[in-house]
Length: 295
Image 1 (cartoon, rainbow, N blue to C red):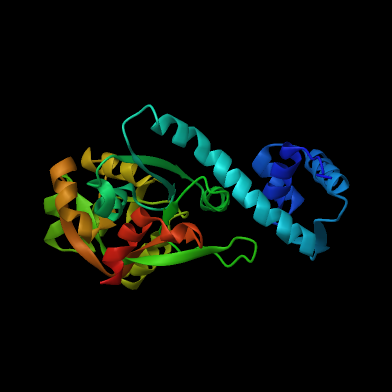
Image 2 (image 1 turned 45 degrees about the horizontal axis):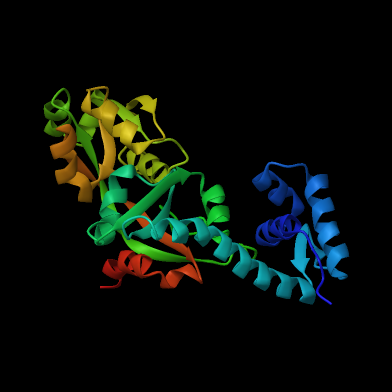
Protein backbone atom coordinates (compact mmCIF):
# COMPACT_ATOMS: atom_id res chain seq x y z
CA UNK A 1 0.00 0.00 0.00
CA UNK A 2 1.39 3.43 -0.95
CA UNK A 3 2.27 5.74 1.92
CA UNK A 4 0.54 9.13 2.00
CA UNK A 5 2.61 12.20 2.84
CA UNK A 6 2.37 15.96 2.49
CA UNK A 7 4.53 17.39 -0.31
CA UNK A 8 4.97 20.63 1.63
CA UNK A 9 6.54 18.64 4.46
CA UNK A 10 8.85 17.05 1.89
CA UNK A 11 9.84 20.51 0.64
CA UNK A 12 10.76 21.64 4.17
CA UNK A 13 12.85 18.48 4.62
CA UNK A 14 14.54 19.18 1.27
CA UNK A 15 15.55 22.69 2.36
CA UNK A 16 16.77 21.46 5.76
CA UNK A 17 18.85 18.75 4.10
CA UNK A 18 20.38 21.28 1.71
CA UNK A 19 21.14 23.81 4.45
CA UNK A 20 22.40 21.26 6.96
CA UNK A 21 20.62 22.81 9.93
CA UNK A 22 17.12 23.70 11.10
CA UNK A 23 18.19 27.26 11.93
CA UNK A 24 19.55 28.04 8.47
CA UNK A 25 16.59 26.35 6.81
CA UNK A 26 14.18 28.40 8.92
CA UNK A 27 15.99 31.60 7.90
CA UNK A 28 15.83 30.53 4.26
CA UNK A 29 12.11 29.79 4.52
CA UNK A 30 11.39 32.84 6.70
CA UNK A 31 9.71 30.60 9.27
CA UNK A 32 10.19 29.77 12.93
CA UNK A 33 12.64 26.95 13.68
CA UNK A 34 9.96 25.14 15.69
CA UNK A 35 7.57 25.22 12.73
CA UNK A 36 10.11 23.79 10.30
CA UNK A 37 11.14 21.13 12.80
CA UNK A 38 7.51 20.14 13.33
CA UNK A 39 6.91 19.82 9.59
CA UNK A 40 9.94 17.53 9.18
CA UNK A 41 8.79 15.39 12.12
CA UNK A 42 5.38 15.07 10.44
CA UNK A 43 7.09 13.77 7.30
CA UNK A 44 9.12 11.27 9.33
CA UNK A 45 5.92 10.13 11.05
CA UNK A 46 4.15 9.69 7.72
CA UNK A 47 7.07 7.73 6.24
CA UNK A 48 7.67 5.74 9.40
CA UNK A 49 11.41 6.39 9.66
CA UNK A 50 13.97 8.92 10.82
CA UNK A 51 15.42 11.07 8.02
CA UNK A 52 17.79 13.34 9.94
CA UNK A 53 20.11 12.86 12.88
CA UNK A 54 22.22 15.31 14.95
CA UNK A 55 25.80 15.77 13.72
CA UNK A 56 27.89 18.28 15.65
CA UNK A 57 26.16 21.63 15.43
CA UNK A 58 24.15 20.59 12.40
CA UNK A 59 22.21 17.68 10.99
CA UNK A 60 23.13 14.71 8.83
CA UNK A 61 21.03 12.42 6.70
CA UNK A 62 20.23 8.90 7.78
CA UNK A 63 20.29 6.18 5.12
CA UNK A 64 16.56 6.69 4.68
CA UNK A 65 17.15 10.44 4.50
CA UNK A 66 19.62 10.01 1.64
CA UNK A 67 17.00 8.14 -0.37
CA UNK A 68 14.32 10.72 0.50
CA UNK A 69 16.61 13.56 -0.56
CA UNK A 70 17.36 11.90 -3.91
CA UNK A 71 13.66 11.57 -4.62
CA UNK A 72 12.94 15.10 -3.41
CA UNK A 73 15.63 16.43 -5.77
CA UNK A 74 13.86 14.91 -8.74
CA UNK A 75 10.41 16.02 -7.60
CA UNK A 76 11.31 19.67 -7.03
CA UNK A 77 13.55 19.99 -10.06
CA UNK A 78 10.60 18.83 -12.14
CA UNK A 79 8.19 21.18 -10.36
CA UNK A 80 10.50 24.17 -10.88
CA UNK A 81 10.85 23.34 -14.57
CA UNK A 82 7.09 22.89 -15.06
CA UNK A 83 6.05 26.59 -15.51
CA UNK A 84 8.80 27.23 -18.05
CA UNK A 85 8.01 24.07 -20.00
CA UNK A 86 4.31 24.93 -20.09
CA UNK A 87 5.03 28.49 -21.25
CA UNK A 88 7.39 27.15 -23.90
CA UNK A 89 4.44 25.52 -25.64
CA UNK A 90 2.78 28.89 -26.26
CA UNK A 91 5.76 31.21 -26.53
CA UNK A 92 8.73 31.49 -28.85
CA UNK A 93 11.48 29.01 -28.01
CA UNK A 94 14.05 30.20 -25.48
CA UNK A 95 17.20 28.98 -23.75
CA UNK A 96 17.14 29.98 -20.10
CA UNK A 97 20.22 30.80 -18.05
CA UNK A 98 19.75 31.90 -14.42
CA UNK A 99 22.81 33.66 -13.00
CA UNK A 100 23.47 34.76 -9.44
CA UNK A 101 25.91 37.67 -9.16
CA UNK A 102 27.74 38.14 -5.87
CA UNK A 103 27.72 41.65 -4.40
CA UNK A 104 31.51 41.79 -4.38
CA UNK A 105 31.89 41.11 -8.09
CA UNK A 106 32.34 44.36 -10.05
CA UNK A 107 29.36 44.82 -12.33
CA UNK A 108 31.80 46.11 -14.95
CA UNK A 109 33.04 42.55 -15.36
CA UNK A 110 29.70 40.73 -15.43
CA UNK A 111 28.96 41.44 -19.08
CA UNK A 112 32.49 40.42 -20.08
CA UNK A 113 32.23 37.13 -18.17
CA UNK A 114 28.86 36.40 -19.77
CA UNK A 115 29.98 37.46 -23.24
CA UNK A 116 30.44 33.85 -24.49
CA UNK A 117 26.68 33.21 -24.21
CA UNK A 118 25.10 36.60 -24.98
CA UNK A 119 24.80 35.84 -28.69
CA UNK A 120 23.13 32.44 -28.18
CA UNK A 121 19.88 32.38 -30.21
CA UNK A 122 16.71 32.69 -28.11
CA UNK A 123 18.70 33.29 -24.90
CA UNK A 124 16.58 34.17 -21.89
CA UNK A 125 19.04 35.53 -19.32
CA UNK A 126 17.87 35.93 -15.72
CA UNK A 127 20.28 37.74 -13.37
CA UNK A 128 19.96 38.44 -9.67
CA UNK A 129 22.57 39.82 -7.27
CA UNK A 130 22.96 39.37 -3.55
CA UNK A 131 25.09 38.13 -0.68
CA UNK A 132 27.29 35.15 -1.51
CA UNK A 133 25.78 32.91 1.18
CA UNK A 134 22.24 33.51 -0.06
CA UNK A 135 23.20 32.95 -3.68
CA UNK A 136 24.89 29.63 -2.90
CA UNK A 137 21.86 28.50 -0.92
CA UNK A 138 19.67 29.27 -3.94
CA UNK A 139 22.19 27.57 -6.22
CA UNK A 140 21.92 24.25 -4.40
CA UNK A 141 18.13 24.61 -4.53
CA UNK A 142 18.52 24.91 -8.33
CA UNK A 143 17.20 28.45 -8.53
CA UNK A 144 20.42 29.40 -10.35
CA UNK A 145 22.43 27.59 -12.98
CA UNK A 146 25.63 29.36 -11.97
CA UNK A 147 26.90 31.99 -9.53
CA UNK A 148 29.54 34.52 -10.59
CA UNK A 149 31.77 35.89 -7.84
CA UNK A 150 35.18 37.33 -7.01
CA UNK A 151 36.23 34.49 -4.70
CA UNK A 152 35.77 30.72 -4.57
CA UNK A 153 33.03 29.12 -2.52
CA UNK A 154 34.03 28.52 1.10
CA UNK A 155 34.55 24.88 2.07
CA UNK A 156 31.23 23.52 3.30
CA UNK A 157 30.37 19.85 3.27
CA UNK A 158 26.66 20.64 3.20
CA UNK A 159 26.93 22.67 -0.02
CA UNK A 160 28.13 20.46 -2.85
CA UNK A 161 29.32 23.15 -5.22
CA UNK A 162 32.33 23.55 -7.46
CA UNK A 163 34.38 26.71 -8.04
CA UNK A 164 35.83 27.28 -11.50
CA UNK A 165 38.38 30.04 -12.09
CA UNK A 166 37.44 32.44 -14.88
CA UNK A 167 40.77 34.27 -14.74
CA UNK A 168 42.10 37.49 -13.26
CA UNK A 169 42.59 41.13 -14.15
CA UNK A 170 45.14 43.63 -12.86
CA UNK A 171 43.74 46.74 -11.19
CA UNK A 172 44.38 50.37 -12.04
CA UNK A 173 43.24 53.83 -10.95
CA UNK A 174 40.82 55.76 -13.17
CA UNK A 175 39.70 59.35 -13.12
CA UNK A 176 37.57 61.91 -14.92
CA UNK A 177 38.95 65.00 -16.60
CA UNK A 178 38.59 66.79 -13.24
CA UNK A 179 41.48 64.84 -11.74
CA UNK A 180 43.22 62.91 -14.49
CA UNK A 181 46.05 65.36 -15.31
CA UNK A 182 46.92 66.05 -11.65
CA UNK A 183 46.81 62.38 -10.68
CA UNK A 184 48.77 61.19 -13.70
CA UNK A 185 51.58 63.74 -13.42
CA UNK A 186 53.55 62.13 -10.59
CA UNK A 187 51.80 58.80 -10.12
CA UNK A 188 51.57 57.17 -7.59
CA UNK A 189 52.79 59.97 -5.26
CA UNK A 190 50.08 62.17 -6.77
CA UNK A 191 47.42 60.06 -5.07
CA UNK A 192 48.15 62.11 -1.95
CA UNK A 193 46.80 65.16 -3.80
CA UNK A 194 43.50 63.81 -5.12
CA UNK A 195 40.35 62.40 -3.47
CA UNK A 196 39.99 58.62 -3.57
CA UNK A 197 36.93 56.41 -3.87
CA UNK A 198 37.34 52.88 -2.54
CA UNK A 199 35.19 49.74 -2.53
CA UNK A 200 33.96 48.70 0.90
CA UNK A 201 35.65 45.99 2.94
CA UNK A 202 33.17 43.47 1.46
CA UNK A 203 35.28 43.60 -1.69
CA UNK A 204 38.15 41.11 -1.83
CA UNK A 205 40.30 43.69 -3.60
CA UNK A 206 39.96 46.30 -0.81
CA UNK A 207 42.61 44.70 1.42
CA UNK A 208 44.98 44.43 -1.56
CA UNK A 209 44.53 48.13 -2.33
CA UNK A 210 45.24 49.11 1.26
CA UNK A 211 48.42 47.01 1.27
CA UNK A 212 49.50 48.58 -2.03
CA UNK A 213 48.94 52.09 -0.69
CA UNK A 214 50.81 51.23 2.51
CA UNK A 215 53.72 49.74 0.57
CA UNK A 216 53.96 52.97 -1.42
CA UNK A 217 53.92 55.00 1.80
CA UNK A 218 50.69 56.73 0.78
CA UNK A 219 47.91 57.96 3.05
CA UNK A 220 45.46 59.49 0.59
CA UNK A 221 42.20 61.25 1.41
CA UNK A 222 39.38 58.73 1.04
CA UNK A 223 36.15 60.63 0.41
CA UNK A 224 33.81 57.67 -0.09
CA UNK A 225 33.57 53.90 0.35
CA UNK A 226 31.07 52.43 -2.08
CA UNK A 227 30.01 48.79 -2.24
CA UNK A 228 28.42 48.73 -5.68
CA UNK A 229 31.05 48.95 -8.43
CA UNK A 230 28.63 50.56 -10.89
CA UNK A 231 27.94 53.31 -8.35
CA UNK A 232 31.69 53.65 -7.76
CA UNK A 233 32.12 54.26 -11.48
CA UNK A 234 29.21 56.72 -11.55
CA UNK A 235 30.63 58.86 -8.73
CA UNK A 236 34.08 58.65 -10.27
CA UNK A 237 32.81 59.83 -13.65
CA UNK A 238 31.18 62.89 -12.05
CA UNK A 239 34.49 63.97 -10.50
CA UNK A 240 33.97 62.99 -6.86
CA UNK A 241 37.34 61.23 -6.90
CA UNK A 242 39.51 58.66 -8.64
CA UNK A 243 38.62 55.00 -8.27
CA UNK A 244 40.04 51.49 -8.85
CA UNK A 245 38.81 49.17 -11.59
CA UNK A 246 40.08 46.35 -13.75
CA UNK A 247 42.60 47.15 -16.47
CA UNK A 248 40.60 44.81 -18.69
CA UNK A 249 37.72 47.31 -18.51
CA UNK A 250 39.78 50.30 -19.69
CA UNK A 251 38.16 50.72 -23.11
CA UNK A 252 34.64 50.08 -21.81
CA UNK A 253 35.09 52.60 -19.00
CA UNK A 254 36.21 55.33 -21.37
CA UNK A 255 33.36 54.68 -23.81
CA UNK A 256 30.72 54.56 -21.10
CA UNK A 257 31.91 57.10 -18.53
CA UNK A 258 34.75 59.06 -20.20
CA UNK A 259 37.22 58.15 -17.44
CA UNK A 260 40.84 57.41 -18.27
CA UNK A 261 43.49 55.18 -16.77
CA UNK A 262 45.84 57.04 -14.44
CA UNK A 263 48.15 54.20 -13.50
CA UNK A 264 48.29 50.54 -12.56
CA UNK A 265 48.40 48.94 -9.11
CA UNK A 266 51.11 46.39 -9.69
CA UNK A 267 50.42 43.17 -7.79
CA UNK A 268 46.74 43.98 -7.17
CA UNK A 269 44.34 41.69 -9.00
CA UNK A 270 40.68 40.83 -9.19
CA UNK A 271 39.84 37.13 -9.44
CA UNK A 272 36.71 35.82 -11.10
CA UNK A 273 34.93 32.52 -10.44
CA UNK A 274 31.91 30.63 -11.68
CA UNK A 275 30.31 28.37 -9.07
CA UNK A 276 27.93 25.61 -10.04
CA UNK A 277 26.53 22.43 -8.58
CA UNK A 278 27.78 19.09 -9.79
CA UNK A 279 24.54 18.50 -11.63
CA UNK A 280 24.41 21.92 -13.27
CA UNK A 281 28.03 21.97 -14.38
CA UNK A 282 26.96 20.19 -17.56
CA UNK A 283 24.52 22.98 -18.49
CA UNK A 284 25.67 23.83 -22.04
CA UNK A 285 25.63 27.58 -21.44
CA UNK A 286 27.59 27.24 -18.20
CA UNK A 287 30.12 25.21 -20.14
CA UNK A 288 30.41 28.06 -22.65
CA UNK A 289 31.10 30.52 -19.82
CA UNK A 290 33.84 28.24 -18.49
CA UNK A 291 35.39 27.57 -21.89
CA UNK A 292 37.52 30.75 -22.35
CA UNK A 293 39.28 30.16 -19.02
CA UNK A 294 40.32 26.68 -20.15
CA UNK A 295 42.32 27.97 -23.11
